[in-house]
Length: 118
Image 1 (tube, rainbow, N blue to C red):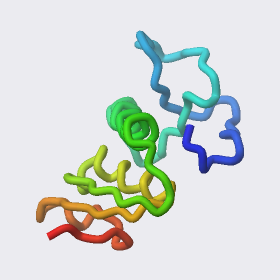
Image 2 (image 1 turned 180 degrees about the vertical axis):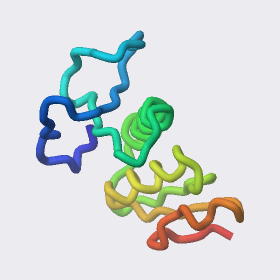
Image 3 (image 1 turned 90 degrees about the horizontal axis):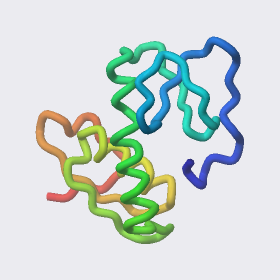
Image 4 (image 1 turned 90 degrees about the vertical axis):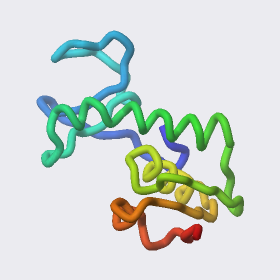
């Protein structure tokens, strides 16, 4: 869970969620709330099921491997992709100055608040 999250996720019964869990190939699962994320109504089940993997990767890079802090610079190559976009978002949430690169086809997916590498 990102440090910037101050309140727990509040859910009601019968809400659709996705979860990152080992060996969890089941339509029903008992899991701690911090492992859950709401499934966006516009997301297909395939996208919702796949999303936790790049999210976990980005969190491990930002938090565990790099321990990015406010005021630091973070260079993200491939910022137009799913994992790259999450690295941009998480780095920004931690107060880092994010510098991003992306290919021509994916540049529009990078937030305009980041610096562009050239």
